[in-house]
Length: 255
Image (cartoon, rainbow, N blue to C red; front, side, top):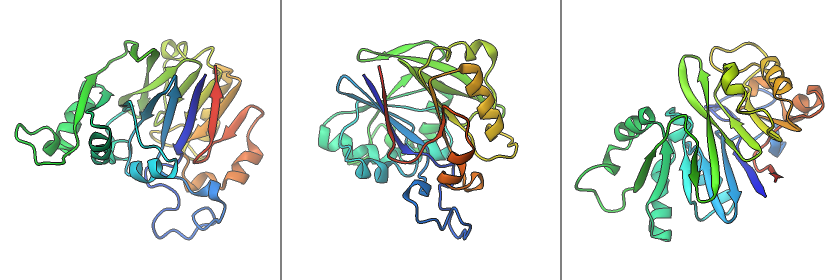
């Protein structure tokens, strides 16, 4: 059994956006409070985080997560890597260096953003990362096989991941046919969409629905949602059968 928990389902600014008074940002529905996108994968007592954005600390505290076995990064943008300093709590309490799986380009970015974590002489208490470089080749964490899926965030090549019967794709607006084949057969598809109108680097709602139809998973969950896409209840009311709006804290399971 694989369990996926949505730690965050929002876009790069989260929802509510600072200073915005729209009906989504002022909604009192907890399902309209969207932290930066991230998910937790659990299987056979292993806990794997995909992306660690600026809300990393808040998300782990909310879900009472005190330990991780690994972090996988989709790409280097700050809303997906900006919380990595808080890995130091896990380093300290669990007395271990945390493996972080990412592409070489992402690793290079981390060396710049967290230069103090890679110094030869380190200041006491800095986060400790064990960088594991990945590419398009499947890899394992424990007994979990993870298949990278190459997708494009405008012109930036990033990675989605298939883990068992779950596929997770965020920050994409293009998936080439050969990579789309890797997704076929997934029972659960998690896919990004940011708004109804076309966007330069994310799937629009209609584009995401078209991808979901091609994959034909039993269930598709939309994530990386901005305030422009409406409230959770509004979005849910217009989605086709089998496609759902995700929300922070939602947990799904599959074999």
